[in-house]
Length: 267
Image 1 (cartoon, rainbow, N blue to C red):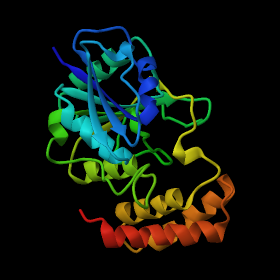
Image 2: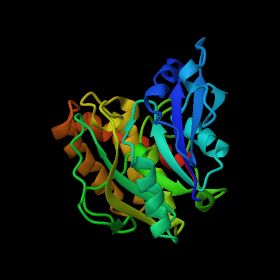
Image 3: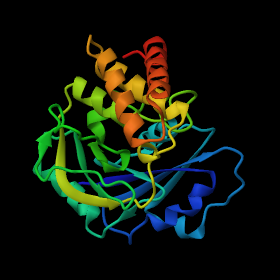
């Protein structure tokens, strides 16, 4: 029987929300909760005291560090990335497992999510993420992977993501970019698996320096060629139209983020 671990990352009082993520116990399904504590005095809610729930505590902050800890605690065949504020449907986990069983050479799969805050446009067809449809990007809780495919080969870069020192987004984009570069079989499937009715970092109209810099860092990492400077300008223009960030402010922080990545991030 193919098994699945749902990797839930939470910080401090977020542990109180995790109970809302859990479904009724299902054979072969386990929840791995990575609980990051930074001055929190909360206790584990009684709803999480279940045989199918494992809680691992770590100190400090950093979402990528938290995700890597959850991966390290996992033991199932398939892992599904989760946050503490998502909602699953009863057939979600079986749909994810069925996808991997039907595709034995599949390493990483991305799926559809739905949200009233972020109206992402998902294709209605399957495709190889090495040649993505224009405009497509994966959000972390849409990603599942075969655990053995990434074991010792791939993890989230801890210089990216919420709680990182400088770059406060972009961790899932870099994760997927590196997966493709390493030759992993990564595909999108037009199956809705999760609801997330809260704004994500990427759709916040009030972009912070840390999230803008992360955009530049990602462009540098993904396009280390002569097209990168043009992409910085294009991204700044798009941000000036879709957020409350002016063009020159966006371009300044984007190039600053690219310089940071060039100096500090190696692959």
